Image (tube, rainbow over all chains, first blue to last red):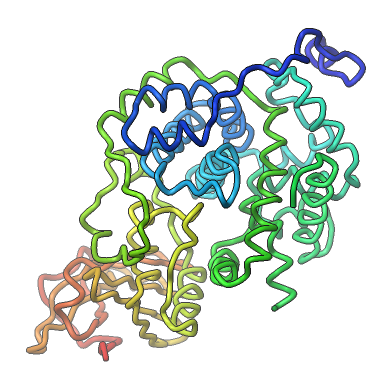
Length: 202
Length: 251
């Protein structure tokens, strides 16, 4: 498929090496807490592709994903004063809110019936197919793909099923055919390796 | 520190714990700076993965988000006064769509969470950075997490009924485990008992058998001194027509 080949590791997209100007998300959150809607619009523009992309990965259904993303942004607006820069980045805080909402949605009863439970299990080795057409063609994306490659297959599967699949660690264990209770270790090991490979502060 | 619970940090960071584990871990997190740091760093690592899944949202999303925020007042910063329970009721979430997606606590989960609260000394102070504000919690979650949550339990023919009551919230929740279906043409009805012994309907349990059911009771829980369950004709009765199969007194 053409899009996939465009994303292959040997084919980086030119012209992306210059880092785009990234607004200070923490400052935008602080302004939002003071009721500055313009600041929040800027915050939305800077984060919506990653936030919406994450929600779609987890929720799948576009109509539901849109609802969940909207709820996430409204919660971000409402609780912006509660953001504590000492406990992590603004992006991480926002994405945590969105992820939690997406997971809550897929675990709720009405959504569960609409899910294809086997999808992730059968396609986990193709990590990005669902959003392939609009995958972030950036050095960041490439860096992340390389970091994922450094994980063991089980670690990678466990992290992806948990984070993008929205499954509990016990469900992850069942999907991967590994003993109950071991998936949480694989998830943690995988995230630690990912963190260290990406050179992030622990 | 408990090594087992420490090992949940990764699963917690990516929301891969069930509700009971999450409640346990969050209690642990409050007193474990190492875990707080680890969770923050693992979350940040997971968030990096989203560089590869970015997707342009429909333009309508931006419009509706920006339209809606103008009607929502941002919460004030936390200033050290962490007693949110009394105001939780007054602040109703303004997003209508939230009502539909209230997350049902499963029976077992709710019962276990209640047990955790009882054993844990009824203390709950959310970790500020990512715990939903009280206004974001479902009514059931608010009750079982209330600082003054009290838990009462009764076993009825193998089914277990747990009541969790918060006087400050004026709410109580009933959690039924392994509850059988009500007899044909009947429903289980829950009642509050007045101080004078009179019974006031607090709602009907779902008719069908379920492994776990939780239900917020109708009425101001702080005003009553007990809960009873009776079997009533389908649809319930204005007052009990049979002796209670269970009576639980608030202490």
